[in-house]
Length: 428
Image 1 (cartoon, helix red, strand yellow):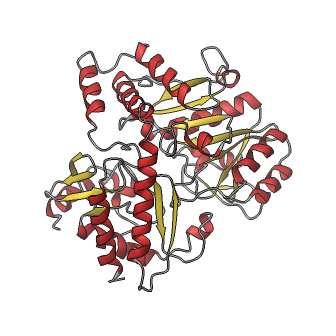
Image 2: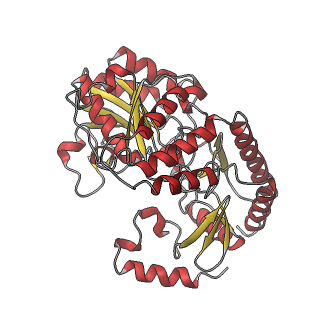
Image 3: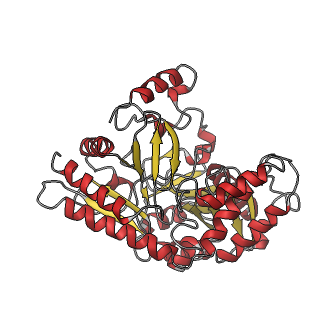
């Protein structure tokens, strides 16, 4: 495939946009080469500026669970646009989507809409600190909760030490209130709690990790976090920006039967438009302004176009009792196909999958946390990525990102993908 137009557009973008992109992973820094500029998308396919068609396994990093340009969502946005695009005032749509979301997700009574997953997680942390009147949080290495200062933290020198900033612009004062734990390691979490008694407001976690590749929680991990939080007056925050409304109608809380105190959403809840949300039981949410002391606001929060898209998406998901069975079946089919494609090769790999999230890690050892994910052979991944791109299959341009499956994929698409993987695997 030729990408002459994309290369030209990237060169132009670099002159006026830092790095030529508005989100770093798009720049292909971890795989090399020039990013693909998309012109349009429909169903399971991307169409780039050079006229190439690509089968899409990113799906806008998750929200296109029913496919690109899904007609009910497109129609809802078009019709709503005719009535005005932004008011900065309440609309009935906000209550309608809030009511539907609360009915679908266990253990939440009130929800507030914001504009991104980053904003949702940032606000959830502030709410947890205000509610508990404690300052510190625990997050897990490899879990990404957006680019808010509190989350851009790397490990300290030991289990009881503070984290340190891993981005200029994040102050040491902010970093001291973030403690870093190992994903899937309950004992590590216990040590952090013991070393910081009555100081931890919240533990925030991707209950199924998607930002170090797909990594499922070990049996008992989420249950153990729930028990530790309950015993130590700590709020448990599930970052379901990726998993919410994707792994089940009620997300991971429904899938694994573990209740969080606060849940954050993004991706699917916006139907492809920039929407985030955070939700909890009423006594916690009522700590938010204007009825509580914790301030959070946004002019575009509850934007009518975003609410129309999100409502249409949630209605479609809620009305389709077979959706998750289809998604799981397609993803399982893809997993088996990848395994078959790697037979009779010397490739070392591990496949992780939960529902419609799947990752290929180029290492033969189990991948259970950031440390084990980092052992993967990135050179092999680069060749794998570009090989699939040449075959017309687009996966995330990073070894540390999950693939997202859409219901718009046909089994013919999956077979094409598996054959492409077989071709590429024979060259690795």
